[in-house]
Length: 358
Ligand code: UD1
Image (cartoon, rainbow, N blue to C red; front, side, top):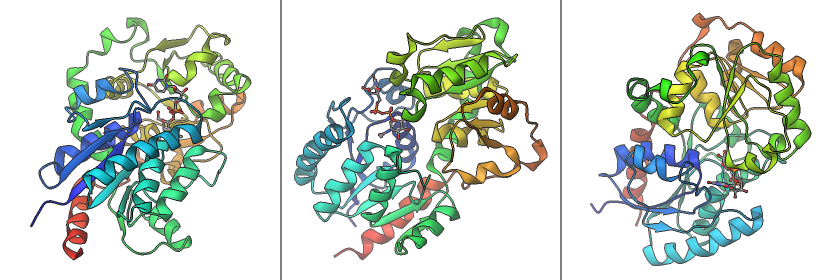
């Protein structure tokens, strides 16, 4: 049997992590051709992930970063279409919910090439989030859908998608399992953070447009954090750069350039709690057994809300402070999102599907 030939489209930071996990275990089973759209392009948002996790150099680098959503997605589609027509893969695989995901899926579906969606069935039910639109469209044009939990499968069922839906666990857990202990042993947290905050800090990330494109919302969040006694470690997403100069940064908030994946895992291990609006970090906080405060009206990862491991809050100081001060019973922790072998389950399903192809 020939190896299934799969074009994989990646472009944003969380996709490099997911792809590292997939490639590590699947590279010998499949003929993988990778397209990096360039959506994230700074060396600390992109290159460092490839180097650190030993990801193969992408076969195609598109350098399509910036621009409005339509402009960015459109330019990606034009370039991806040319490549797919040339490579003629058996499948096109996309991860998550970014504009790179949408662009890859749309092009493949229109060329009648089966789309594989990893992290399918997630919904925030908030269509003002660009990611929500990307998820809905991608799911509805995919031929194989891999869900992180039963909730995803259930949601797809409600939307009429029932064929070729698999609950395989979450691919980010494969990455987390491979590197969490390694990062603790190999990253020297003293070289990253000031000595006096080690053992005392919370970890903050904020990058959703709803929180960062609105100066008032972000200033509210920062003001709320200023009344917390503990220090806060904040690696800045490039999206925040523009707005940062116009903000008052409280004395207990320490700013850093984006951390690499291993640095992030080590800093996560050293923190007391996580405060975030990121999707991926909510899961990583859970796996690391760190309580999470999510500054959003809703979450796609609803399982993490059980027993207050994850608390949703608005941007008001009172809500954020109350959420940080909430105690979590550590004995309520139970495994979520699979067993860390998601890549193997996905690979098996793809092979089975490939065997059925003419
Ligand atoms: C994207 C994804 C989001 C994902 C997040 C992870 C979409 C719609 N959103 O949001 O699902 O959770 O990545 O980080 O695809 N920029 C730089 N340097 C970089 C990367 C971006 O300066 O390396 C700038 C861009 O030019 C842009 C801004 O940051 O002005 C936002 O980038 P964008 O591509 O919209 O995606 P994210 O907000 O990062």
